[in-house]
Image (cartoon, rainbow, N blue to C red):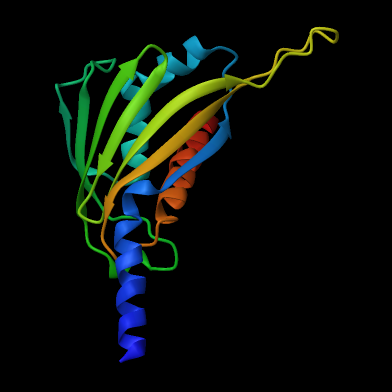
Length: 176
């Protein structure tokens, strides 16, 4: 009886802790200015490359995107999620939706699937310049995520993993 109550309380804590979870990750970029970063993140080319890497299918841009994003921009597609420790052949394609807005140089996104939904803000930070040695450093991308909802068996740190995966894809695109 006591073990049943303990399991119930543990399960209840997991469910109630969803909306409070946040995490922040930083990624070095090849950009010298925030304007260069913004130009990259608003280009259709970036998202076309992103969707190719995640093997997105049945892709819809709402509204249609020619070369640059218009805000709010919705991107819908189907893909097999990349879940660590679970082979992709054991998973099925799911619907994924990104909705992006922009306020100044901040990109505000909401990513939704049947397993998890979260907000993500993408901003930039200067790494600082060394004016004595005439060195201009690149800027970093700051990714701040906040859990909206998730299925109960998914741990909160899944958000950390998703932001790290996005950062890895970003770096792959920048390197190509």
